[in-house]
Length: 221
Image (cartoon, rainbow, N blue to C red; front, top):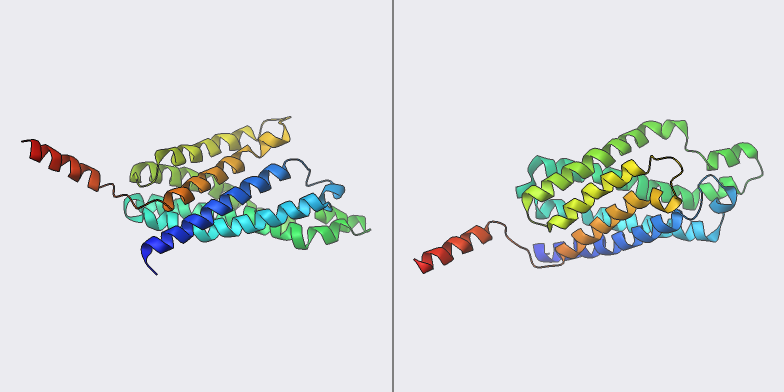
């Protein structure tokens, strides 16, 4: 398979995965993950399935972003890619998967102790979520910086990643509307859509621009 075909497949995966993730995070904001009725509702189940599929697609397409700008992005791009991949795996794949398979069973059980497990994460998972929080912050920041420096993808995608960090800080404010609490992952998903769209375009060479300029100047002389 040619590199162009691989980039196109990655672009399609990111584009579709990002769109599905936007739908997932927006619909999730209309319910509470601590409410038993919400956890057993059809909307919550369908939303979780959409989020699971979207995150899987995004995870499959994300390597194309790193490979496309690996030479220019360097170690920062690699660390950013690994951090974001871990976040998608934990928050975008694992959480919806448990919401589809385990949470409905626990929430529908008449045992109050089992219902309590449905509305709270097991203590053993806390270290993994702490790593996910660090990856969410550092991974997004490093990938944004690497993307701005590499100049392979449009710069607005990197600025969207930085806006994701700002949205994440806003989510810690008290009495925030539920829709705004999902602002950060929605913006991040839109950035994935941007990466996917860019991967579907013909590959641009950042080094070709200076060369063309110098050739034009030589021709004028």
